[in-house]
Image (cartoon, rainbow, N blue to C red; front, side, top):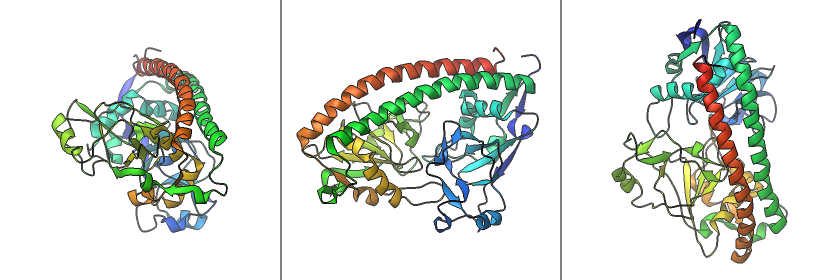
Length: 393
């Protein structure tokens, strides 16, 4: 690693927090088009997703004293989906919500190289050093400035970033294939049940009427253990699956206390309620786990609802539209339990639901094979990152 040095991130990048004063936009300041107001939920796969963007007027933007984004800034998440990062590629002004910080690399540091560091295992390891350990993880910009970054020459940074960009592009193509397979599920749903948005309101029932219970996870940070039972966050519920990879664990005794009045059973459904709200997944095995308050816990009445059908229903446009209308908040949109209980859903005959689930399981089988391939690509990419930041590429 000749020519490499280790530096604190704050020495090679400027940090700009969002304006958290009286000029911070409220929900009433959002308009249909204008200047993007970016929050943590808008960061996806290293980019800014504009599909559900909030916008503010130019006059509101001018009032902000800080948090104004420039092209090629890195946006980094300080709360909620901790450590999520993206490069802002747009050549137009924008501003950040308080859940983010702008990291603006100096001429000594390549923006692509720094992004790969922050998004990779080394950056995640630095992040965990400063995580405050609460059930709603958060960082300060001051903490992120103290991240230690291995830094070669600028030309070497660019070479490494180019290699990682190409490898990451392969992963993105695989993810796109998975997304297309996921869209097949909605196609099957529409084929069997039609579009519930089109004049079928009389057939809809309140979600609370077909669930035994709708509650959420723990509201207080539990006592953590170095290992044990996984404790999950919103980011662990994606693609109608539960990812048990986590850095937080609790003991058996803590688990028993947390689930004493809220047992988690096979066939229950989890539903995210903050930031990336609206993701659903079925509990498919009886392994022990617990989760934060920003995940709703639905226990369907099994004589009315098939769990797999419910999970798909919760991700249809019918329910997503209700969620979008109900969600409140500026930095991170949030749904509460009363709003979720009031969701109106389609409930076909149970035998018809079972027929749908049988078709769905065939799609899931194909998805599992693609997931295995995706995981293999991720392992290769992680190995490549390790080698890159050790100077072995």
